[in-house]
Image (cartoon, rainbow, N blue to C red; front, side, top):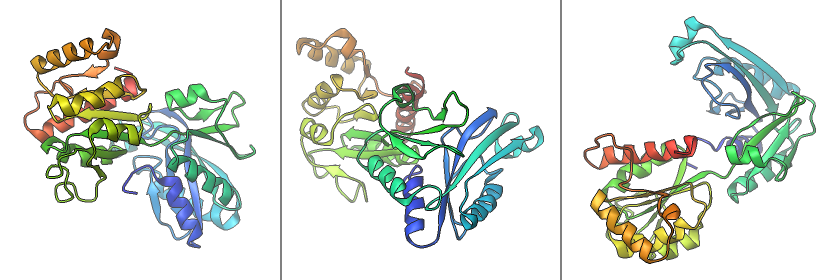
Length: 321
């Protein structure tokens, strides 16, 4: 995977290659900690790393502790404070403190359990990994609805049991393999999205223009229906052609996608609204569309428009704007 959040998958691969592996998870933070609770770092028995638990200030110490934990087959809870003097070096406004749980794969986190976690993630099934220094390690799909909805890991009330939320990876469906999409796709990948391009025009959606990407040459409504629309999916419509955009848009308006953006001027969007009203969509449904797409940052040219789109997607995802 060309992603930044495939940490469990990487740990499982290293373990199965015979290197040994551990997962380090941020379980608590105070102050201006650089990574949110639930962030992970995979460490191999050979000292390789993937992911992060801080802005780089404590990774070296975590790796050293993880290598010892792998050798000894025991979990370890680490706590680090970042002084105000050190904070500037890692881009923080002030100091912070983090707690990190390190779990060797195999003797602490069973291989079969990690395999089930990886399978759930691949199947887009939300799952909670329940763990801690003394807790029975297990996966649960029920009983954590609020955490799933807020995508928030954390300790339970007992202060000992930690629940790591693994929601399905974010997806971005782009209708229209246009110039903006060429800039948006790699940016979205860096931000942790799995992008999918849909465009029946093969000259637009070509491997030459989008090397290594998943491209469907279906009509957009068929493509989104086949791929699925859920609450971890964003849809961006870029063709500027109603016969391509509207069918996919109509499916999205009555789905759980967290973001819908449509390219076009204010005048173009007004005509879009008229078509949707005529098709029986309510004002509340139509109001979910961000059109013209993207934050108003004065973007000029496809790359800057792509930045504005990704920024707006992030705003909606994290703030519900």
